[in-house]
Image (cartoon, rainbow, N blue to C red; front, side, top):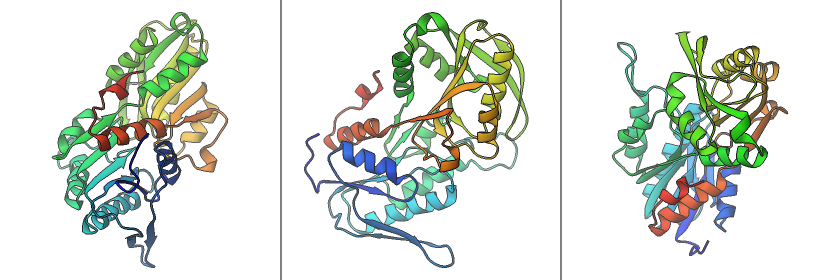
Length: 319
């Protein structure tokens, strides 16, 4: 990519520095110097160590665990860049935390996805680039440009390259009703049929499978979702599908949150392989043999290049 050095700068907080370095490498750049530290009482301190006056700034920071620290690092870095007279400030948020609270599901609840959008905008961001929001309506919470990338082509390409007879042998399964639209789009790329798991949630992070709609007996199955948190939904679905006659159960998602008992459930469940993207870094204890992580760096780098050059992003949706 032909980029004039100095006109564009990539910064990283502590959320996913390795991804930021991969993005910069794809652009032929380096991660610019920025110090993100804490005072003894836990307050976050950010200092940009080089000039950014008039530059196009891209700050790479997912708001994954520790969610509040990573969010504050992002907000303070945006503010630092704004006060240093950056030309344009782009927040690259591979994983957008608080996205599950996008409406009032019960009385007297907050809509924190909207609150976080307001905080990012108020801090001084001119644009947000993210991937696979848990709810697409969050795009409308921003009063600044929001570029919503999809990790689906990366995952679909992986399976197309891995399995020669995928159209004959596989079924894509949505682990719940909320994921049907994205699973259908995924299945269309692979040219395979779809099935749907009907579940209910008696409580937070608790799911019970009521029924499975569709044919999958004697087929290999790919469970597809945007994120896996405690892995209760995906492993319950995988175990039930396997018990009801599927040959092998594969699973994939964009965001590997993997909190609580997720790793234990995945290790002991029916999933043969779980493919995830690197929007969230995997700690050592999460790097188990069944999990394979693919990089989103090229996709984000292409998006950054096109935004910087004023080119459309529609081409990035092609497989």
